[in-house]
Image (cartoon, rainbow, N blue to C red; front, side, top):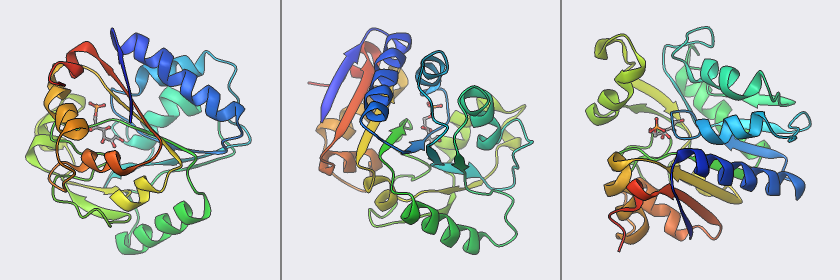
Length: 234
Ligand code: F6R
């Protein structure tokens, strides 16, 4: 793992965008994308860069069940607002949280991932070590699946909703095995609240109790963290 410690999220975003730019210049065509606060500075840097995704494909990690792209809290809406409006892709895939048959949608999404192997995957990390919506205990061999969100994740995400009760209780997420198939992975984390998860993910045992710890087994991972998120590393 290549761990880069930066001063803050603004500096991290610059480094993150450089990694995207290098991958793009080297011919990367498929980008695995994440939502949440973490990738915002990277997306902002990309939006003001010369990168051109119009011949590329994006495949997002996850989406809430029950929210469609017109819902401001949906991940589809988030992507449109923070990246796709400024930097469109030829094709952008996000799990359909409104699919009438979720089992079918899950199988369909696995097929999309199989047809579009991810060259560069960007990830955030949850306070409990989750990646995508793969909560602690998710099997390492999981593919796309429906997830019941833990209270910790519901609480963390409630800041984006009018109140906690509005946070969807389930989501569709790429699985652990799907994420590990990406050729290159970039994980970013900023702030004190991520320090425990980062220490466990980088220095702890590889265990399904800390989903991000699986990244220790991936051959091409870069982790960008600020000093606050790095404070519990030895
Ligand atoms: C989002 C995602 C999540 C977030 C994680 C951190 O698509 O998959 O795993 O990356 O919950 O969220 P933030 O960045 O808001 O702290």
